Length: 122
Image (cartoon, rainbow, N blue to C red; front, side, top):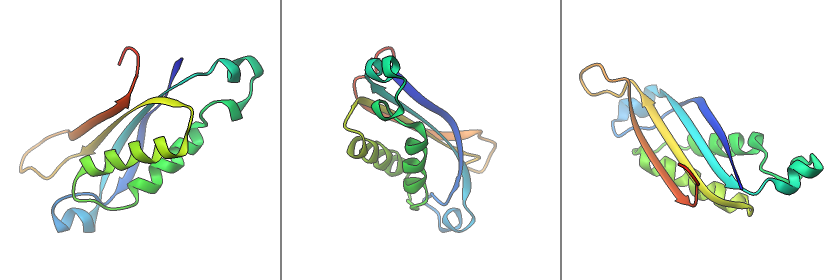
């Protein structure tokens, strides 16, 4: 088993509880980790026997472009989308950070991290 990760995806999106957040938008940072068996892919040097992280990125973009009030909901949609698309994953962990959340003072980010299935060492 191996963990394939995409870290630091910077995506502009319109998530937030307040209407102005959904109008103005904000920058988000997304990290995704997928637990999968890579043995056959590595032995054969075959992209189609592993998880293509370009596909992971595109699936994440689809969900990030759909505005939500809560980043928890966005995270959960990403996890479900990845499990639906890839049959060869044993676990998924997603962390989503909203940069400079509107809290009335300086805060680097608000974040949520969720996971399903097994991710060894995480």
